[in-house]
Image (tube, rainbow, N blue to C red; front, side, top):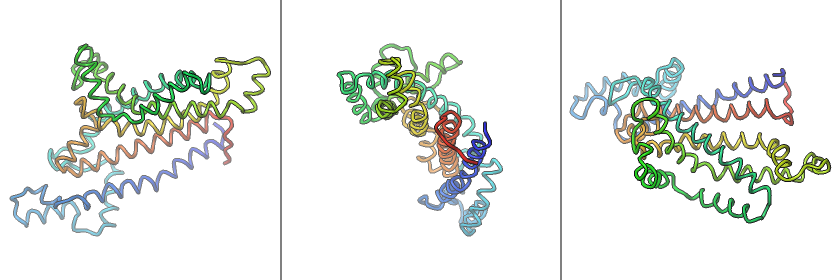
Amino acid sequence: MSSGRFAFVLRRLLSLAPLLLGILLLAMLLLSLAPGDPARQVAGPRAPQSEVDAVATELGLDRPVWERYVRYVGQVLGGDLGTSFKTGQAVGGQVVEQLPITLSVAALGVLFALLVTVPLAVAAARRPDGLMDHLIRLLAVFGIGLPTFWVAIMAIRMVALPTGWFPVAGTGEGTGDFLRALVLPSSVVAVSILAPMVRSLRATMMELEDAEFVLAARTLGFGGLSLLRQFQLRNAVPSLITVTAAQAGYALFGTVVVEVAFGLPGLGQGLVVASSTQDFPLVQGYVIVFAVLVVLLYLVSDIVNAVVDPRVRITA
């Protein structure tokens, strides 16, 4: 990597600091903005006021916001996401336990979407305004309007139950069951992000149709699928990386719905349960993890584009 690209990566890493501090501020304020008295919830509805006051002091609720924020930032940077109100367990431990399931569903969903996006976009761009192009664009518009939860229910009713190939809920036992349990949830995630990816890649390839290097390739005898694959698709990769990162972030939040529908014990289902039981430290932990994952996705997208795209000029 050149010094200019290294400096670019370093600047992008440093630029994350204010954003991450803002995320921590919002997460901390969840406890203050939540309905009810968090100290009362921890102490119990029948606890005496003296015990409630002691819990409030322990949680730092009697301190100024800025002091609580500084304390919270130091706590999180030290790897401590707090303790669950309901279970008394460390939030970090629960997050680490559930994270692999969420990442697996989201990553496999993005992979499925990519495997479908590229051939569909190429087929649409091969003959613009042709029958195949119109059909694919129509399917993309239809796909955008499909509710994720409805798609998950249809997948269970029309695939999992009739065939018995995939579990309806849970992850089963063993690696084989776990992989089978990921197929349908990941497919639902893929459906939820597929349409924007196909439309974006097709549009980029169409914009490149009149680019100078494409016109030069035509004069050299390239045409049809060869021209699309070697010139338009290859030069559309940076755009595809960007839109994939954006949709991967959406896929992470989409796992909340998917995990609930398929009964997967990941971060999404954990967030729903923690919210319903008003377990605010756990909700804070989930919010921080989801937000940081999305930020990292965009960071990786920027870095990969800076490294692989020769058209990007980066100065130190």
